[in-house]
Image (tube, rainbow, N blue to C red):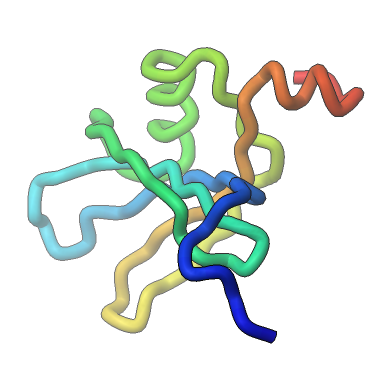
Length: 102
């Protein structure tokens, strides 16, 4: 199958929260958007006060109140040894339109 040259459909959004394992001093959360072929379409990030899922949830409520986490946080460790967590996300109006509650 030949893929189109650029993503045209936004298929999946997810949050990533990181632990500042290497003491860079930059605590942040990323929101990624992927297409149906799991290619990255877009992303945005913002700083948070602390590391981990609890700080990420608090920051989402503050920075993007219409964004909802739709799955539990899943802990992972990168090849370099950094702890991070991922969780699916959706805009509140998408949850309402699909019949799910926000």
